Length: 169
Image (cartoon, rainbow, N blue to C red; front, side, top):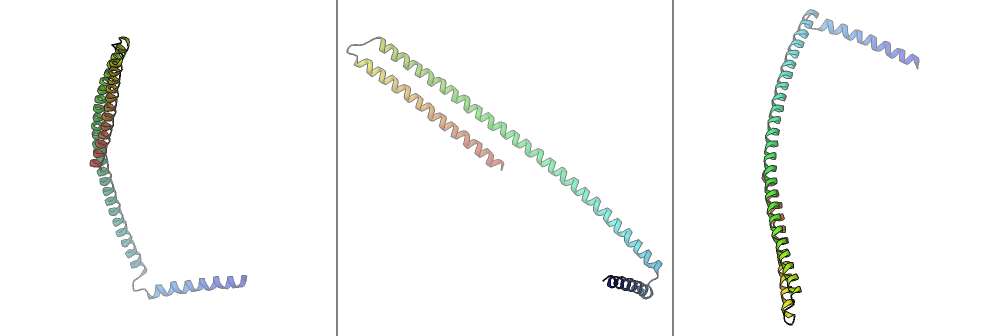
C-alpha cells in the first residue's frame, strides 16, 4: 500500500509539471503581460469593492437615521396619546368618586331618617315601618344606580382605550 501512495504522488507531481510547462508554451501572451493583466484586474476589483463598501455604508447610515427618526416620532405619538388616555381615565375616575360621595350622603340621610323614625313611634307603628321601607328602598336604588354608572364608565374607558389603540395601529 505504501508503494501505491508513492506512485500516486509521483504521478501527480509529474503531471502537474507537464501541465504547467504546456500552459506556458501554449499561452498567447508572455508571462510579463499576464502578470500586468492580473495586476490591472486586481486594481479594478479593489476599486469596485471600495465603491461598493462606501455605498453600503452610506445606505446603512441613511437607513439607521430614518429608523431613529421614525422611532422618535412614534415614541412621541405614543407618549402623547397615553397621556391623553390617562387624563380621560382620571376625569372619569374623579367623576365616579363624586357620584360615590353623593350616594354615601343619600344613604347616610336615609339611615338618619330610619333612626329618627324608629326613635319616634307614630300611632300604630305602620307608618314607621313604611317610612323605613321607603328609606331603605331609596338607598338600595341609589347604590344600584351608582354601580350601574360605574360599570358604564368603566366600559366607556375600555372603549376609549381600545379606540385610541386601534387608531394608533
